[in-house]
Image 1: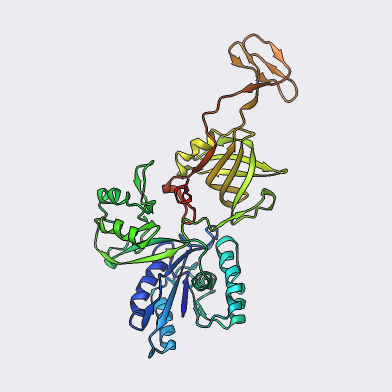
Image 2: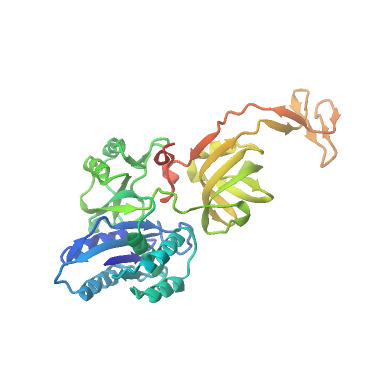
Length: 413
């Protein structure tokens, strides 16, 4: 039996992964958990998400004398007990896959990937489950059925790429209070081979612990359970109620669609090639905006303030630079996660020099005038400029990295 669960948390507390951790403890009395539970990050642009837009799937093998109906009742009862139904955006969904004909995987592979990259309707999940006789239970408007089915689909049909995360949970009476974690031990554990994004070295901050009032104490990400456990063993903190190692699609870039600028839709994430056509501009709030074009189509790209020093890379771009950008699109603006600078333009048209300063424009098509001596020139001049920027890959720092975004180090860069 594969059990999929989604949308049980809220912006102010609880966590679907914690519900799964509690449920795992209960299920162990009725059979065996097979492999790792899955933590699946869905499309990060969905407006209905709470925080990280995570769904869970557990593969469970009931003991020979176990009543499957009893197991289903246990799962549904746990959701009814723990989900934050008072939040208007909490709409839990639970899915049970017991029989898996070959055609089911064909449909589920497509559906599960769409849940990570695209926007789906609740009816699409319900129609697929009815077509294949999948048992499910939706609460309120049932929106969580989309993520629950997608996570179950990955559990059944496999993940094309995966990492691991060890999540440690707090004792319940500490929820909503400041987390007690020894920072020195975290910095020491951050050097564990096969782990990443425990700290942000460039910005000198710890990034593996949330700030919201939910049950999570911290999460360690890495390439194997062994690496996670080694790092975990060195961290000193308040008491850990329980911990779970999840297999996950985090840090895989699974959300990115390789596309063309002309085809971009809001609420999706893309990898786009283009040429810088709008010079970078720093706007109110410290955000840096520039524009790229490809075959006549254009889009704005943004390095927002939380990306810190990454913005200095973006500020150094010039019109004519050839780039590949990656990130999520909303309001026809791409929120940068990574950029590859393919080539740099060092031939720039600038206002003529005169008396040691650039001439000022007299208006469109009217030429340029020297503010000191009054000399006039009609056209800009070509200048070969030295660029301090180097071609290559650049990424936002760990403090600004989204759950699904793959660190360059994980790509061998």
